[in-house]
Image (cartoon, rainbow, N blue to C red; front, side, top):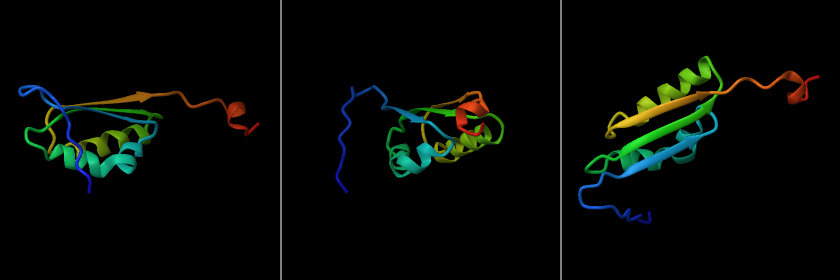
Length: 93
């Protein structure tokens, strides 16, 4: 595996921004990298943002974030609830 040196000031924490369009996109797309970064010393700060539907998909997004970030430093998890598109826009009607 290739190393990725992440430059930062000596007292500045590493900040990681994770963006996902759906509840499991971050976990699938870069889950291994997130887990490896979360184990760094000092642990980085994470901003985990998912643009999701409401209800079960939003719950799934929050659950996935909590499992992946449990060994990380400070974490902010935001699930943006987007309204479901109207049926005529989905090609159903």
